[in-house]
Length: 319
Image (cartoon, rainbow, N blue to C red):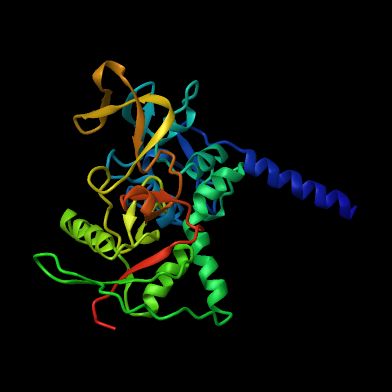
């Protein structure tokens, strides 16, 4: 009898989960059986009553700077256009390429709103893409609890002097992953270096590294935490892509290159001419943390966050 009760309860739960909303383009709310329209997600109104349609993690992925709310860029067959997130997830043969957090597609397939951190993508590759930055930071937290210590910065000439203001920078030749590197910078009162003040600081930095014959690879304070929001610095500022910051990589296969037409559309350049060089960061990204590698002449590249590199720290006070 008890077994029958358990089976009946399980069947009831399954039937409730499998129940569909009364209209198309609707999704179940997080903690109730009610539904809301997908276009109402992250519109600023508590349509579900439990705020599951305004959950902060969902909304960060639901909005982006290129398309209107609920839409995302779809690169397909040489063209790039803004499409709804629902449409992005449905298109196949070939599918869209872009920066969408694929956990949103999984949520839409499940037809229920829930925090993205609770959603597990079916492939290991997707899980790694989602969590690489966070994993590097958790790696540091686990080891710091064990009392791990790091050496003091060496006595190197380490202050940049752009025309507008000095920027104190410490070069440390010890190596760690991106999370460890950032945490070290914080222990000396600073953070990983950002380069959103303009190309002048970048030029001064590269000149400093070459002047002192530095040949190591460095972590800087940029990462890709969410593919919809794009690359950002540790202070939240958007990272500028393209020249003069990012490196180029050669590829065995050639690909056409696109250029922007208006706000939400791109076209193939030079009648589809094929090129063997692509500029970082790649889509999808090769790694989710930004680095300046000696191999790339200290141009910025997207690297795997758990690789070992030296931290490039900036701090407001002399230490």
